[in-house]
Image (cartoon, rainbow, N blue to C red; front, side, top):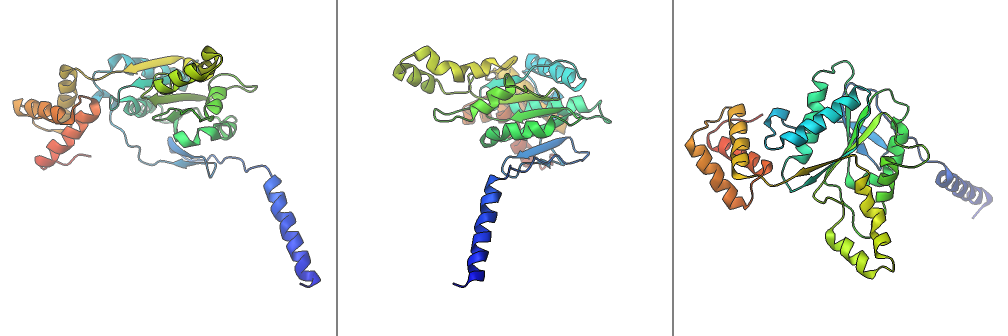
Length: 286
């Protein structure tokens, strides 16, 4: 190997070392009129969502109390007043994530000039929350950060990033951000995990306190439970009327039979039935 090749190799190694030592690039926040984004934790950037997958707020039936509370909390935040982070927990398919997206649209219906931004962050990107908050802190807009189906496993330490964001840390949560999460677990961790840590720890109460206390840092806990038969039929009839499907007795009978075959009654099951019914009747849904 000649001297030139040796020097080139040395320069390349130095360049590689400097690149590893360099701070990561700051997260990118695009200047755009979009009001919904996906956070890409790996690329450290927000990706606009032109068409959000959601349903109108008025179609969410059987969750009136949760709907009113979350809507009022979100409106206060959008108007610049104090508001609470919210944990929506409960049974699958009961409208938790649908409510977050529908409330966002309802709030923005009256805010054409200064829309509230919705940023969805994937569960696996929770550990990149500090970078996202750093990027949003100086921005003039207000942001609801949303994580769907949030939960933690025994060996998962990324919950510490979320705890610091919700309450604590030197800087604290930026005033222009709010955090909404949905989960099937009230304490964001499986009951078997709690019992296992209690049984194997020298100090059982302290072993689980750090993880369980994270759910206490949400100012709002909104519980969602399985539908009664009446609530389920109300949801089905609401969908049918909205989309122009016949609302006769045969619809009710078919809806109940559908729920029996699915082994559950929920808003998700009702929507799946409506899709099937519309397909049978050759009626297009938006």
